[in-house]
Length: 111
Image (cartoon, rainbow, N blue to C red; front, side):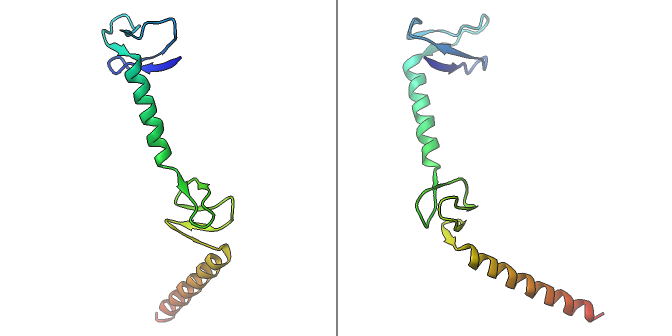
């Protein structure tokens, strides 16, 4: 079985082993000719492209969902191609917030 989507009428149909390898789209007004071998090749290429986009954690080398996430396997914070322990990220964010609050306080006392 192979799911085929017609590029002309945008409708999908399932090709089964009892159907010919080449034939006409089953939609009445459509005259597009399908080729099962070409459609299988397109499906394989789509799957190959999908596997190229798999991301890996720089720390544990296991799969992750995005470039900015917490790895569910090792717990490190992943930012792009780098990973940091949660403790270091927490300290960095705390220091930045303290600096921002001190700057804001300074500007409000100038008035």
